[in-house]
Amino acid sequence: MTDPQPASANIIDAAVEDYLNHLQQKRLLSQHTVDAYRRDLEHLKPFCAKNAVTDCAHLQPHHIRMLIAERHRKGSQSKSLQRQLASLRGLFRFLMQQKKMQLNPAVGIRPPKGEKRLPHTLDVDQMSQLLDIRDNDPLSVRDRAILELFYSSGLRLSELLHLQLQNYDRSDNTVRVLGKGSKERIVPVGKAAQQAIAQWLQIRDQFAPQNDTLFVSQRGTALHPSTVQKRFRDWGIKQGIDRGLHPHLLRHSFASHMLESSGDLRGVQELLGHADISTTQIYTHLDFQHLANVYDAAHPRAKKRED
Image (cartoon, rainbow, N blue to C red; front, side, top):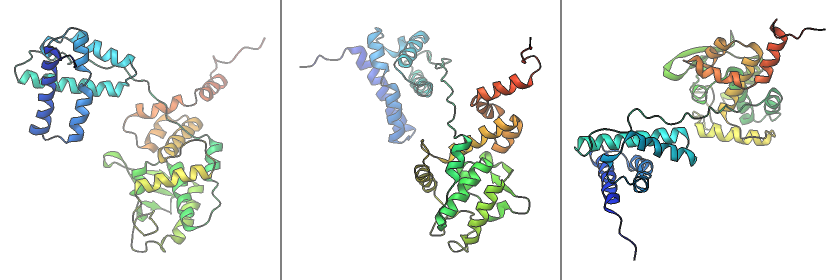
């Protein structure tokens, strides 16, 4: 026979269940969303039991900090902890509305900062290896044009999929892109991508003579993101690339190689369509040794004096 739960555990459990029922029945959130809230709140009851907290009304900000610190020590990432704090704030706000709490102890508490993960990139040799596609069947010609354009112009997958024939200007070799926030930008298209797109356009009409989308499927319809992602994975394996290939990897590689060669952070920001330059600055960390060598060679005070 199992021991009955202490009354405090039942009180806290009941508070959480009341909140989850409120989310589902009053706010009409989906079962999937409610389950996510449940997972975020499931650590509260054992924490309270361990720290002799018998009611949510007795929780103080230092308790919430202890809970978040404990989850962090056990490996929870910053984003997970941020979501957990949001769930706790929602619970306590609900209990305040029910006159069961006087303050929200989770307000103003932030999770530990997560480490910024640098995006993976391919180096120039790996890019050359990937783009050295010798197959000339129609789908390979199309895929080579897509790969070349991604690397040439640093496009997002959604941007490439929405390109129309009229967006590609063959007279000045640019492409007009509709980016995030419906912001348009014009980016140049390099010679290798120009040649690959020209080969594709020669055969494109056999798939979709009535469709204005630049890149289409065998059936003449617009490409689905999952189709492009699968084709990328397949090409990565076929071309001997030692990591999972995906569209954003080519965008990261474009940004890294452009910044490494030019050092023009603002220019790369414009090409990528970043609203905030801090988003672009992450690429300055990708090849620190290269930048350090440039500094050592160029800065007057960095050069060693010869004896």
